[in-house]
Image (cartoon, rainbow, N blue to C red; front, side, top):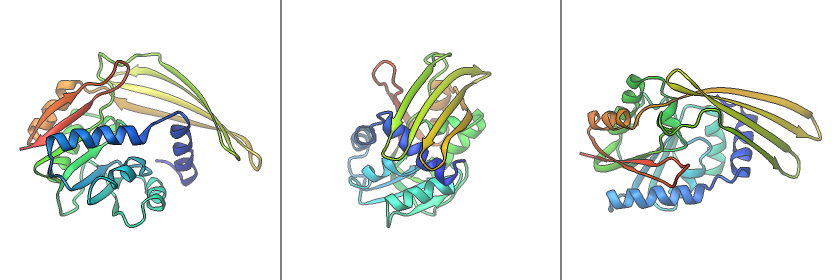
Length: 237
């Protein structure tokens, strides 16, 4: 869970590292349109601060978002005035309507800690997807594609703040343990240290596919360039 300041830090770091929300969103839209050409509504689950959703809103007549973090949603609301945003757990929520496209980006599905939690989330996606609609889900790495020991380092500067980010990823049981350290410097507060330790489950491709199938989807996997994760595209039966 991010505090309000950390939601700002989250945006600053990922955009500064070159995360291309526009290109990622365009790829998702293209895959969704291929599977469901007449789609006009979209629900973005784990929408975070709303940077994918802002591009989805340009392509679909109706959009909405769901996220667990109140502070992430506060940032998203400022970015997306008028867009319905709901605070909820992806494993169990009810919006009392269905959408032609359901998305879940940024490997958020990997925060499910077990196959049972994965199934609960995909079941919930299914309850919010129209018949003939499509779910597009960005998975975390598979066990055979994850590179243990991976280290990343970045420095991001703005007019009033400099952030240095260093991360190390390792295997912890059936999950990735990602240790991230930030040094945040600004004129008012000097330098402070922020540390995050996150577990992201290494589900297999087949475990994802079985969860979709049990939830009433027909899944396919759109592979990506080497060193990048693909996307699951699942048509609701």
